[in-house]
Every structure is written in C-alpha cells, then in structure tokens.
Length: 223
Image (tube, rainbow, N blue to C red):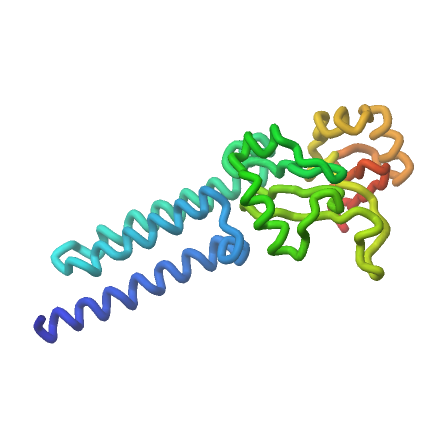
C-alpha cells in the first residue's frame, strides 16, 4: 500500500470519527449509555456505513457521510416528535411493563416481552436479589433494564417509606385516562387534586404521578 493511500485512509478515519462523535453528542448523553431500539439501529447502521469508505478508498467519502447525516437528521426529528406525542413514543420506544407485582411474576407480561425465567433470575442476581417474593414491583424498562422496588421489610434502613409503583397521570399537560382508570380514579378526582394545588387545568402540569398507595407527586411546568 502506497503512502498516499495510507494518508487517504488516515484523513477519512479522522473525518468519519468526528462526524460520528458530533452526531452522537448532539443526539444526547442518554443515548450513549441507554440505547432505545431506534437509537441502537441508528448506532449499528452508522458503524457499518462508516466502515465502507474506510475499507475501499475507491468509494467516495460522501457515500458514507451522506447516509450518516440523513439517519442523524431522522433520529433528531423522531426524537422531537416523540417529545410531543405519547402515542408515537409508545410505538417507537414501547412502554415499561410490570413483570413482578407484590412478589408474584406476571407470566403474561413475561410472554409479551419474550423474557424468560432464566433471564429474570439472572437480572435479579445481578441486583443482589434471588427471591421474587421479596420484590414489590419489577419493572422491565423500555431499554431492557429491570428496575426493582423491594417490599417494605426488605428496604434498606435509609430508604423512604414504600409508596408503591407510581403511574404517570399527567405527562407534560396530557392526561393519561388509562392510568387513571387503572388506579380506580376519574377526571373528577383529578380536577379536585388540581384545585387543591391551585392549578386551573392539566395544561399547567409538567408531571403528575399517582402511586397504588395513593401518593401524589405533582410538578408545575414553570417549576
């Protein structure tokens, strides 16, 4: 290989490195450690596209940069739309699933998520647990991680009192009626909660959650 070819490969590598680095940084820090499905696809395709012009210097560098730029723009657009639409966010990212509730494993949730018992026990052991009966809630997050909420007696001495799993009732001004119904509440109950906090409507609320034990957390948009 001639020295000029080595120089071309070096320059291309530097250009592609900084192009990918800038793209991933602009997409946000969260993507670096907790990839959602769409983000994983983008990362995998970018890696493949970047390798092509490096393996064959006869291929124009633009053939690698242009698809990377297009996918980067698509990811930014989809991320922006997901911020505005809860339904689209559920479609692209999915939603958290409770697979352990009050010490019992939900077999239907396990099947829906193609999550095996072996995988569940591996996740429990990784978090220092080996007994599902000691877990109040086991939530399979949208990035595939398992979050555990222990039962009262198993909570560390410094942990806050058990409040149960918190469901989102208002998400950036939008009311989630399904979660209200799931917890046996209705719009009238919600209106009374807002009045108690001197709020005129859900539009003023950034997030309001309600746990299964009745604990309410509310934060205004301006807060």
